[in-house]
Image (cartoon, rainbow, N blue to C red):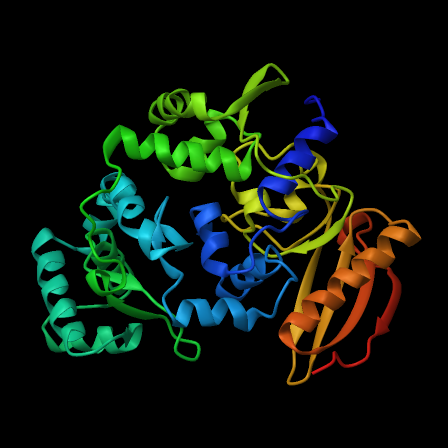
Length: 383
Protein backbone atom coordinates (compact mmCIF):
# COMPACT_ATOMS: atom_id res chain seq x y z
CA UNK A 1 0.00 0.00 0.00
CA UNK A 2 1.35 3.46 -0.85
CA UNK A 3 1.98 5.78 2.09
CA UNK A 4 -0.92 8.16 2.60
CA UNK A 5 -0.01 11.80 2.17
CA UNK A 6 -0.10 14.22 5.06
CA UNK A 7 -3.03 16.56 5.49
CA UNK A 8 -0.53 19.37 4.99
CA UNK A 9 0.25 18.22 1.44
CA UNK A 10 -3.43 18.28 0.51
CA UNK A 11 -3.99 21.63 2.22
CA UNK A 12 -1.08 23.17 0.34
CA UNK A 13 -2.29 21.84 -3.00
CA UNK A 14 -5.84 23.04 -2.41
CA UNK A 15 -4.55 26.52 -1.65
CA UNK A 16 -2.01 26.63 -4.47
CA UNK A 17 -4.65 25.58 -7.00
CA UNK A 18 -6.97 28.32 -5.72
CA UNK A 19 -9.64 25.83 -4.68
CA UNK A 20 -9.71 26.38 -0.93
CA UNK A 21 -8.63 30.02 -1.03
CA UNK A 22 -9.31 32.27 -4.02
CA UNK A 23 -6.97 35.21 -4.58
CA UNK A 24 -8.03 36.30 -8.07
CA UNK A 25 -11.22 37.96 -9.31
CA UNK A 26 -10.28 38.16 -13.01
CA UNK A 27 -10.06 35.01 -15.15
CA UNK A 28 -6.91 36.26 -16.89
CA UNK A 29 -5.07 36.70 -13.59
CA UNK A 30 -6.14 33.25 -12.45
CA UNK A 31 -4.99 31.65 -15.70
CA UNK A 32 -1.69 33.55 -15.47
CA UNK A 33 -1.23 32.08 -11.98
CA UNK A 34 -2.03 28.55 -13.16
CA UNK A 35 -0.05 29.12 -16.41
CA UNK A 36 -2.03 26.54 -18.41
CA UNK A 37 -5.34 24.80 -17.64
CA UNK A 38 -6.54 21.73 -19.53
CA UNK A 39 -9.62 22.74 -21.51
CA UNK A 40 -10.58 19.96 -23.91
CA UNK A 41 -14.08 19.96 -22.38
CA UNK A 42 -15.06 23.61 -22.77
CA UNK A 43 -17.99 23.68 -20.34
CA UNK A 44 -16.06 21.72 -17.71
CA UNK A 45 -13.00 23.94 -18.03
CA UNK A 46 -14.99 27.17 -17.67
CA UNK A 47 -16.48 25.82 -14.42
CA UNK A 48 -12.98 24.81 -13.31
CA UNK A 49 -11.94 28.45 -13.62
CA UNK A 50 -15.14 29.92 -12.18
CA UNK A 51 -14.94 27.91 -8.95
CA UNK A 52 -11.36 29.14 -8.46
CA UNK A 53 -12.31 32.83 -8.78
CA UNK A 54 -13.32 35.06 -5.88
CA UNK A 55 -17.05 34.65 -5.34
CA UNK A 56 -17.32 31.67 -7.76
CA UNK A 57 -18.98 33.80 -10.48
CA UNK A 58 -21.10 32.63 -13.38
CA UNK A 59 -19.62 30.75 -16.32
CA UNK A 60 -20.34 33.85 -18.39
CA UNK A 61 -17.54 35.76 -16.62
CA UNK A 62 -15.02 33.26 -17.98
CA UNK A 63 -16.67 33.23 -21.40
CA UNK A 64 -16.41 37.03 -21.64
CA UNK A 65 -12.69 36.81 -20.90
CA UNK A 66 -12.36 34.41 -23.82
CA UNK A 67 -14.42 36.64 -26.10
CA UNK A 68 -12.20 39.61 -25.23
CA UNK A 69 -9.07 37.46 -25.71
CA UNK A 70 -7.84 38.03 -22.20
CA UNK A 71 -7.70 34.23 -22.07
CA UNK A 72 -7.20 32.02 -25.13
CA UNK A 73 -7.94 28.35 -25.66
CA UNK A 74 -5.36 26.68 -27.81
CA UNK A 75 -3.25 23.55 -28.10
CA UNK A 76 -0.22 23.60 -25.82
CA UNK A 77 1.38 21.13 -23.41
CA UNK A 78 0.91 17.49 -24.49
CA UNK A 79 -0.98 18.58 -27.61
CA UNK A 80 -4.23 19.10 -25.68
CA UNK A 81 -6.52 22.12 -25.47
CA UNK A 82 -5.40 24.53 -22.75
CA UNK A 83 -6.49 27.89 -21.39
CA UNK A 84 -3.49 30.24 -21.41
CA UNK A 85 -3.02 34.00 -21.44
CA UNK A 86 -1.97 35.73 -24.68
CA UNK A 87 1.27 36.73 -22.95
CA UNK A 88 2.18 33.08 -22.31
CA UNK A 89 0.67 31.45 -25.39
CA UNK A 90 3.67 31.78 -27.70
CA UNK A 91 6.55 30.63 -25.50
CA UNK A 92 4.56 27.74 -24.04
CA UNK A 93 3.47 26.59 -27.49
CA UNK A 94 7.03 26.87 -28.78
CA UNK A 95 8.41 24.92 -25.83
CA UNK A 96 6.38 21.80 -26.54
CA UNK A 97 5.73 21.97 -30.29
CA UNK A 98 8.77 20.03 -31.48
CA UNK A 99 8.10 17.01 -29.30
CA UNK A 100 4.39 16.95 -30.17
CA UNK A 101 5.20 16.98 -33.90
CA UNK A 102 7.74 14.20 -33.40
CA UNK A 103 5.26 12.08 -31.45
CA UNK A 104 2.65 12.60 -34.19
CA UNK A 105 4.89 11.46 -37.06
CA UNK A 106 3.44 7.96 -37.29
CA UNK A 107 -0.12 9.31 -37.33
CA UNK A 108 0.83 11.79 -40.06
CA UNK A 109 2.04 8.89 -42.20
CA UNK A 110 -1.17 6.93 -41.56
CA UNK A 111 -3.22 9.92 -42.74
CA UNK A 112 -0.96 10.57 -45.73
CA UNK A 113 -0.02 14.02 -44.45
CA UNK A 114 3.26 15.39 -45.80
CA UNK A 115 5.22 18.56 -45.08
CA UNK A 116 3.90 19.90 -48.37
CA UNK A 117 0.32 19.40 -47.11
CA UNK A 118 1.11 21.26 -43.89
CA UNK A 119 2.84 24.14 -45.67
CA UNK A 120 0.01 24.51 -48.16
CA UNK A 121 -2.72 24.31 -45.54
CA UNK A 122 -1.02 26.93 -43.36
CA UNK A 123 -0.80 29.35 -46.29
CA UNK A 124 -4.50 28.84 -47.06
CA UNK A 125 -5.56 29.30 -43.45
CA UNK A 126 -3.38 32.40 -42.98
CA UNK A 127 -4.75 34.04 -46.13
CA UNK A 128 -8.34 33.30 -45.11
CA UNK A 129 -7.85 34.80 -41.65
CA UNK A 130 -6.15 37.92 -42.97
CA UNK A 131 -9.61 38.94 -44.19
CA UNK A 132 -11.49 37.86 -41.05
CA UNK A 133 -11.00 38.45 -37.34
CA UNK A 134 -11.87 34.83 -36.65
CA UNK A 135 -13.26 31.79 -38.44
CA UNK A 136 -14.92 28.63 -37.20
CA UNK A 137 -13.44 25.19 -37.67
CA UNK A 138 -16.09 24.49 -40.31
CA UNK A 139 -15.24 27.66 -42.24
CA UNK A 140 -11.56 26.75 -42.25
CA UNK A 141 -12.45 23.25 -43.43
CA UNK A 142 -14.30 24.77 -46.39
CA UNK A 143 -11.35 27.06 -47.18
CA UNK A 144 -8.92 24.14 -47.14
CA UNK A 145 -11.09 21.97 -49.38
CA UNK A 146 -11.48 24.84 -51.84
CA UNK A 147 -7.71 25.24 -51.79
CA UNK A 148 -7.25 21.62 -52.77
CA UNK A 149 -6.26 20.19 -49.38
CA UNK A 150 -8.22 17.12 -48.29
CA UNK A 151 -9.65 17.32 -44.77
CA UNK A 152 -11.09 13.80 -44.76
CA UNK A 153 -11.17 11.78 -41.56
CA UNK A 154 -8.85 13.17 -38.92
CA UNK A 155 -6.74 15.14 -41.39
CA UNK A 156 -8.51 18.40 -40.51
CA UNK A 157 -7.73 18.04 -36.80
CA UNK A 158 -4.05 17.45 -37.47
CA UNK A 159 -3.80 20.22 -40.07
CA UNK A 160 -5.27 22.77 -37.67
CA UNK A 161 -3.26 21.50 -34.71
CA UNK A 162 -0.06 21.77 -36.73
CA UNK A 163 -0.98 25.34 -37.69
CA UNK A 164 -1.33 26.11 -33.98
CA UNK A 165 2.01 24.52 -33.16
CA UNK A 166 3.65 26.53 -35.95
CA UNK A 167 2.13 29.71 -34.43
CA UNK A 168 -0.02 30.47 -37.47
CA UNK A 169 -3.41 30.25 -35.74
CA UNK A 170 -4.64 30.33 -32.17
CA UNK A 171 -7.91 29.07 -30.73
CA UNK A 172 -10.49 31.64 -29.79
CA UNK A 173 -13.91 31.94 -28.22
CA UNK A 174 -16.65 29.56 -29.25
CA UNK A 175 -19.20 30.62 -31.82
CA UNK A 176 -22.32 28.83 -30.65
CA UNK A 177 -21.11 25.26 -30.26
CA UNK A 178 -18.26 25.66 -32.75
CA UNK A 179 -14.56 26.22 -32.17
CA UNK A 180 -13.12 29.39 -33.68
CA UNK A 181 -9.59 30.40 -34.64
CA UNK A 182 -7.74 33.66 -35.19
CA UNK A 183 -4.28 34.53 -36.43
CA UNK A 184 -1.71 33.80 -33.75
CA UNK A 185 0.03 37.14 -34.37
CA UNK A 186 -3.24 38.96 -33.82
CA UNK A 187 -4.03 37.20 -30.55
CA UNK A 188 -0.53 36.89 -29.09
CA UNK A 189 1.88 39.32 -30.78
CA UNK A 190 5.51 38.22 -30.70
CA UNK A 191 7.61 39.83 -27.98
CA UNK A 192 11.33 40.52 -28.00
CA UNK A 193 11.77 39.06 -24.53
CA UNK A 194 10.45 35.53 -24.04
CA UNK A 195 11.96 32.60 -22.16
CA UNK A 196 13.41 29.97 -24.47
CA UNK A 197 15.07 26.57 -24.20
CA UNK A 198 16.19 25.49 -20.75
CA UNK A 199 15.27 28.89 -19.32
CA UNK A 200 11.67 28.38 -20.48
CA UNK A 201 11.65 24.92 -18.90
CA UNK A 202 12.80 26.39 -15.59
CA UNK A 203 10.19 29.17 -15.71
CA UNK A 204 7.48 26.61 -16.44
CA UNK A 205 8.70 24.42 -13.58
CA UNK A 206 8.71 27.29 -11.08
CA UNK A 207 5.19 28.29 -12.07
CA UNK A 208 3.94 24.70 -12.01
CA UNK A 209 5.23 23.99 -8.50
CA UNK A 210 4.06 27.39 -7.25
CA UNK A 211 0.50 26.74 -8.46
CA UNK A 212 0.23 22.96 -7.97
CA UNK A 213 2.80 21.95 -5.39
CA UNK A 214 3.76 20.02 -3.44
CA UNK A 215 4.53 17.88 -6.49
CA UNK A 216 7.41 15.89 -7.91
CA UNK A 217 9.60 16.23 -10.99
CA UNK A 218 7.74 13.21 -12.42
CA UNK A 219 4.43 15.03 -11.91
CA UNK A 220 5.85 18.07 -13.71
CA UNK A 221 7.09 15.92 -16.60
CA UNK A 222 3.61 14.43 -17.03
CA UNK A 223 1.84 17.80 -16.89
CA UNK A 224 4.25 19.69 -19.13
CA UNK A 225 4.93 17.02 -21.74
CA UNK A 226 8.69 17.45 -21.26
CA UNK A 227 10.93 14.42 -20.98
CA UNK A 228 11.69 13.25 -17.46
CA UNK A 229 15.29 14.35 -17.91
CA UNK A 230 14.21 17.84 -18.96
CA UNK A 231 11.73 18.02 -16.09
CA UNK A 232 14.31 17.00 -13.50
CA UNK A 233 16.81 19.56 -14.80
CA UNK A 234 14.13 22.27 -14.86
CA UNK A 235 13.00 21.40 -11.33
CA UNK A 236 16.55 21.72 -10.02
CA UNK A 237 17.00 25.01 -11.89
CA UNK A 238 13.79 26.34 -10.33
CA UNK A 239 14.57 24.97 -6.85
CA UNK A 240 16.15 28.18 -5.46
CA UNK A 241 12.77 29.89 -5.95
CA UNK A 242 10.86 27.06 -4.26
CA UNK A 243 10.58 25.13 -1.03
CA UNK A 244 10.92 21.38 -0.85
CA UNK A 245 9.78 18.53 1.36
CA UNK A 246 10.21 14.77 1.26
CA UNK A 247 6.97 12.78 1.11
CA UNK A 248 7.09 8.97 0.94
CA UNK A 249 10.81 9.19 0.17
CA UNK A 250 10.39 11.51 -2.83
CA UNK A 251 11.29 15.19 -3.10
CA UNK A 252 8.25 17.44 -3.53
CA UNK A 253 8.59 21.09 -4.56
CA UNK A 254 6.14 23.88 -3.73
CA UNK A 255 5.84 27.63 -3.43
CA UNK A 256 5.82 29.25 -0.04
CA UNK A 257 3.69 32.35 -0.56
CA UNK A 258 0.18 30.89 -0.89
CA UNK A 259 -2.36 31.51 1.89
CA UNK A 260 -4.06 28.32 2.99
CA UNK A 261 -7.85 28.17 3.20
CA UNK A 262 -10.45 25.66 4.39
CA UNK A 263 -8.89 22.37 3.42
CA UNK A 264 -11.87 20.44 4.80
CA UNK A 265 -14.30 21.88 2.25
CA UNK A 266 -16.45 20.02 -0.29
CA UNK A 267 -16.19 20.82 -3.99
CA UNK A 268 -17.70 19.53 -7.22
CA UNK A 269 -14.76 19.58 -9.61
CA UNK A 270 -15.24 19.20 -13.37
CA UNK A 271 -13.98 16.56 -15.77
CA UNK A 272 -10.24 16.78 -16.50
CA UNK A 273 -9.75 19.18 -13.61
CA UNK A 274 -6.21 20.18 -12.70
CA UNK A 275 -6.78 18.67 -9.25
CA UNK A 276 -6.18 15.27 -10.87
CA UNK A 277 -4.83 15.90 -14.37
CA UNK A 278 -1.83 17.90 -13.10
CA UNK A 279 -0.20 14.88 -11.43
CA UNK A 280 1.25 11.62 -12.69
CA UNK A 281 0.80 10.01 -9.27
CA UNK A 282 -2.76 10.61 -8.05
CA UNK A 283 -2.70 8.40 -4.95
CA UNK A 284 -2.64 11.52 -2.77
CA UNK A 285 -6.14 12.48 -3.86
CA UNK A 286 -7.70 9.34 -5.34
CA UNK A 287 -7.57 6.00 -3.55
CA UNK A 288 -6.33 3.29 -5.95
CA UNK A 289 -9.39 1.13 -5.28
CA UNK A 290 -11.60 3.91 -6.68
CA UNK A 291 -9.38 4.97 -9.59
CA UNK A 292 -11.31 3.04 -12.25
CA UNK A 293 -14.52 4.79 -11.23
CA UNK A 294 -12.96 8.12 -12.16
CA UNK A 295 -10.65 7.04 -14.96
CA UNK A 296 -12.14 4.06 -16.76
CA UNK A 297 -9.61 4.36 -19.59
CA UNK A 298 -9.13 6.26 -22.81
CA UNK A 299 -7.72 9.29 -21.03
CA UNK A 300 -11.06 10.26 -19.50
CA UNK A 301 -11.30 11.80 -16.03
CA UNK A 302 -14.86 12.13 -14.74
CA UNK A 303 -16.19 15.05 -12.66
CA UNK A 304 -15.38 14.44 -8.99
CA UNK A 305 -16.80 15.09 -5.54
CA UNK A 306 -13.82 16.20 -3.45
CA UNK A 307 -13.82 16.40 0.36
CA UNK A 308 -10.75 17.75 2.09
CA UNK A 309 -8.73 17.13 -1.05
CA UNK A 310 -9.71 13.49 -1.52
CA UNK A 311 -12.01 12.23 -4.25
CA UNK A 312 -15.04 10.65 -2.59
CA UNK A 313 -17.33 10.19 -5.58
CA UNK A 314 -18.27 11.36 -9.04
CA UNK A 315 -21.09 13.51 -10.36
CA UNK A 316 -22.83 14.23 -13.61
CA UNK A 317 -25.18 16.88 -14.89
CA UNK A 318 -28.04 16.96 -17.39
CA UNK A 319 -29.12 20.35 -18.71
CA UNK A 320 -32.60 21.42 -19.68
CA UNK A 321 -33.83 24.89 -20.55
CA UNK A 322 -34.26 26.17 -16.99
CA UNK A 323 -32.97 23.33 -14.85
CA UNK A 324 -29.87 21.25 -14.30
CA UNK A 325 -30.19 17.73 -12.90
CA UNK A 326 -27.13 16.93 -10.78
CA UNK A 327 -26.48 13.33 -9.76
CA UNK A 328 -24.01 12.74 -6.92
CA UNK A 329 -22.50 9.25 -6.99
CA UNK A 330 -20.69 8.47 -3.74
CA UNK A 331 -18.08 5.73 -3.38
CA UNK A 332 -19.39 5.11 0.15
CA UNK A 333 -22.40 6.51 1.97
CA UNK A 334 -21.51 10.04 3.16
CA UNK A 335 -22.20 11.53 6.55
CA UNK A 336 -25.18 13.87 6.80
CA UNK A 337 -22.77 16.79 7.12
CA UNK A 338 -20.81 15.89 3.98
CA UNK A 339 -24.00 15.22 2.04
CA UNK A 340 -25.34 18.62 3.02
CA UNK A 341 -22.14 20.36 1.98
CA UNK A 342 -22.16 18.51 -1.34
CA UNK A 343 -25.72 19.71 -1.93
CA UNK A 344 -24.57 23.26 -1.27
CA UNK A 345 -21.73 22.81 -3.77
CA UNK A 346 -24.21 21.50 -6.34
CA UNK A 347 -26.41 24.54 -5.77
CA UNK A 348 -23.42 26.82 -6.35
CA UNK A 349 -22.76 25.05 -9.62
CA UNK A 350 -26.38 25.45 -10.73
CA UNK A 351 -26.32 29.12 -9.76
CA UNK A 352 -23.25 29.67 -11.94
CA UNK A 353 -25.33 28.43 -14.87
CA UNK A 354 -28.40 30.44 -13.86
CA UNK A 355 -30.47 27.25 -13.61
CA UNK A 356 -32.66 25.57 -11.01
CA UNK A 357 -30.88 22.53 -9.52
CA UNK A 358 -32.48 19.11 -9.15
CA UNK A 359 -30.11 17.12 -6.97
CA UNK A 360 -30.11 13.36 -6.42
CA UNK A 361 -27.62 11.10 -4.65
CA UNK A 362 -26.65 7.47 -4.93
CA UNK A 363 -24.10 5.21 -3.32
CA UNK A 364 -22.05 3.14 -5.74
CA UNK A 365 -22.90 -0.41 -4.74
CA UNK A 366 -21.53 -3.76 -5.73
CA UNK A 367 -21.51 -4.39 -9.45
CA UNK A 368 -22.03 -0.71 -10.15
CA UNK A 369 -25.60 -0.63 -8.83
CA UNK A 370 -26.83 2.74 -7.68
CA UNK A 371 -29.32 2.37 -4.80
CA UNK A 372 -30.98 5.75 -4.23
CA UNK A 373 -30.31 7.69 -1.05
CA UNK A 374 -32.22 10.95 -1.34
CA UNK A 375 -33.17 13.68 -3.79
CA UNK A 376 -34.38 17.22 -3.68
CA UNK A 377 -34.97 20.26 -5.85
CA UNK A 378 -33.97 23.77 -4.96
CA UNK A 379 -35.65 27.03 -5.71
CA UNK A 380 -34.73 29.02 -8.76
CA UNK A 381 -31.53 31.01 -8.16
CA UNK A 382 -31.99 34.75 -7.78
CA UNK A 383 -31.63 36.79 -10.95
